[in-house]
Length: 53
Image (cartoon, rainbow, N blue to C red):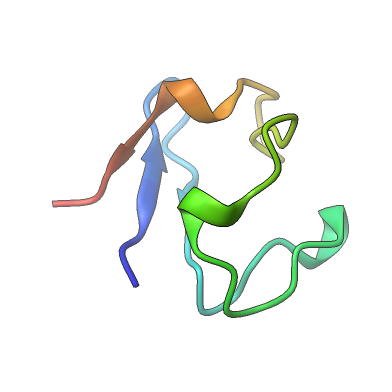
């Protein structure tokens, strides 16, 4: 599964880790995150993330 980077702050969403603090289980693909999920560091939405190269 592909990692995604938050453009404003550089946070990397790693699907193997998920986002436990937001209730996102490990193994959750970025595409499967809820539409209202936001970056845990700076609070921007999924639209501000890009696939990690």
